[in-house]
Amino acid sequence: MPSPLIIAGTGQEDTAGSRSSPAEIQSGEQKVTIKQSAAGSRLKAAEKETRIAAQPCFVLHSYPYKETSLIVDVFSRDYGRVALIAKGAKRPHSKLRGVLQTFQPLSVSWSGRAEVRTLTAAEWIGGLLPLEKSALLCGFYLNELLVKLLARDDPHPVLFDHYVATLNQLAHNEPAPIVLRKFERALLKETGVGGNFTVCTITSRPVQFDEIYVIDPERGPRPAHPADNTPRVTGKTLLDMEQEDYTDNTTQTQSKFLMRYLLAHHLGGVPLNTRQILIDLMQL
Image 1: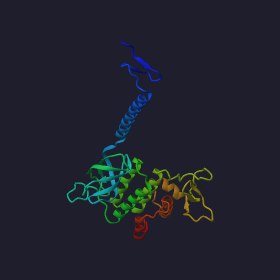
Image 2: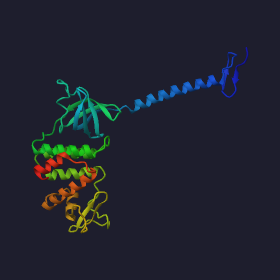
Image 3: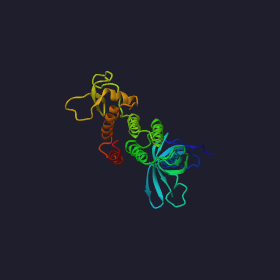
Image 4: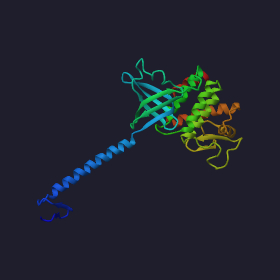
């Protein structure tokens, strides 16, 4: 019996006595490579498939999608702001119809790896009083801030807890201007644009109690100049805001105009619809 022939340059044996051409062998190798690549792609896709179960969430906003579904923008504790499609949520007998309400603590599950995932379950948890009258409008203001200032899929667990606390304070009729100032400040801090109100950016020294400052939205406090046309605040106001102490009337007034200015800057000129309503009704 003839010994196997080794095809030069290929490492392949011809045991049948007939030689396969190099082109045939190369074609076979390419087929194997293509199959392996396809299998690898399927594996990677499976690894990226996201399944999240029982995540604490609040509905920020929702709008119709096709005839029977909704796109729901939720604020989750561990995954940040997430867009979900709630299939069939608009049908009269859908279990989701009465669950996907704003300002209600929910346990939400979803799957998918696209920008808009698929809602798989939502349950009402309870534990918060409903918002009513002016507190309800303040709640919509909070939601509009989150929708317009938070990037999707950017976790903010500390801000989530602050949001829950803020809703609870509004529901218990705590002074809305103070509650909103605290949340606005926390929002800018947690998104990395809040800055440090206790240090002057020009001198690198602590902010002085009786000095007058303006705030550079990108850097922080600096001494005010006569030509400045941005809100002026005392060092006391800045230090009070860092301590969340709004008992002083001057601090309340100055912080209101300061936060309005800073939010407008970071929103890039995008108007806040609920903010204007609040200004008209409550002078917040």
